[in-house]
Image (cartoon, rainbow, N blue to C red; front, side, top):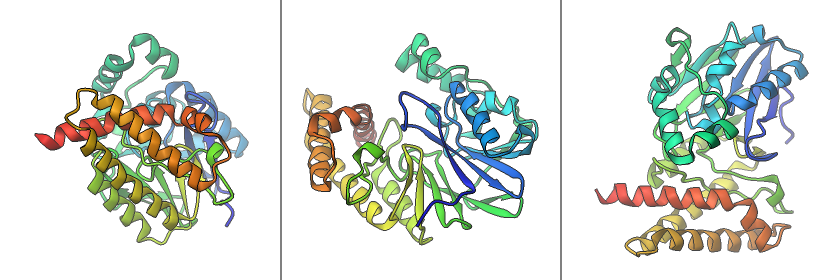
Length: 310
């Protein structure tokens, strides 16, 4: 099944090519973005509009799956370029779009000011009167095309996924994991859960995956990266790995070298699965592609272990 021509994948160029996607849906001359990348991605977003034959005035919606900066950091700057657009965001994420002070402070504490400027660009507020809060089941009307926002915690408590009945597809943010094209094989896409800090929760994540499968989707549009199918097989792969990651977390917890243990065990898990999947890259190259995600997954597992103990 080929992708819907009304759905455009935008490479936001965060970190590297084919790593961080946003999406543009065009319907009857009106447009909606789903996620937007960082402030540095705004030129790519506007260029995608032009390629689709649209102007900024034709954009009615910017829907955010969640407010992690690789998905939403450029929202304020992009909204300045979209005079008719409304921002749609999860209730838990909305305050951070209207006042991104805590987002900026948290990211700066982790990465430092220089890295924030280099990788994320400006992080600006969105006017409160241009923000719509999407409770579970909220619908967005794009020129007669209904986009359904569904609460999907597990990666983050402020996460929603977007169901497009027209294409029978989900825009999944990070709830349905990550899948890079370098790791595709004759068996199809290779997929890995993402537990990046600080709100990973395995049982809600599995429930969110099951909730999406209940719609019998034909494809999933991932932020990291692109359209993947078939959903049911990939969902099975994700659930198996979530359970394996939980077991790894339990085994490493309490060790003085917990973080090193988590990184080593996660690396071994993903390499074993990549080999079984027939990934075309050798182990060293697979580990290099997944290095950032392995580090973040280890951190996310540690946050979950510490929170679960409280």
